[in-house]
Image 1 (tube, rainbow, N blue to C red):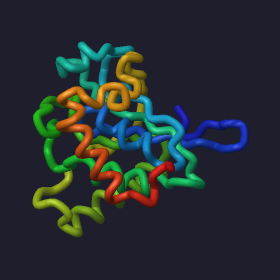
Image 2 (cartoon, rainbow, N blue to C red; image 1 turned 45 degrees about the horizontal axis):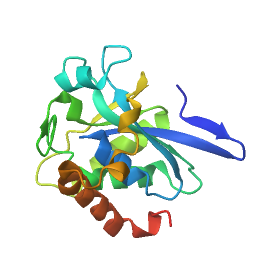
Image 3 (tube, helix red, strand yellow; image 1 turned 90 degrees about the horizontal axis):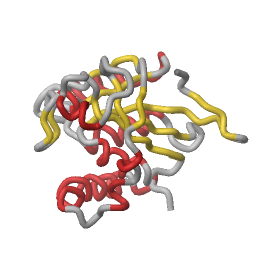
Length: 187
């Protein structure tokens, strides 16, 4: 895997994040300037080509992730880290709200050494600032494989905003990102 890909005139980079349900992460990252895609999927596990049902059991070792394709001349990896650490709780081990299990862990799966360095520096900085009462438990690990989720997960929030989970869990995260990162939103 590489951390960059070419798109006619722009070289896009990729970043892969786990922070609870991938529907939440996708909904937020898709709203940012410079983000061309946020693909829900699975990473960090042992089974090739896992299904959603298999990942939900927790036995595959995968986390629900979002792989973000972005233009680093518009939005930096560090900017994406800022958003990521704002929209989830990186201090809860294998849990986000009511979602519990290793598939909901907080993780940054890096593709480039620079991403690892930036992620570790961000965690150290946030811990030093005592941003949260507890220490950050976010896993920082190399991305060895990314498996796209089934297509029915694509744009889940946009297609299901009246769903109770979307209204109660995803909408507040989107609102928080819009509040704190207004200048980074795509118009």
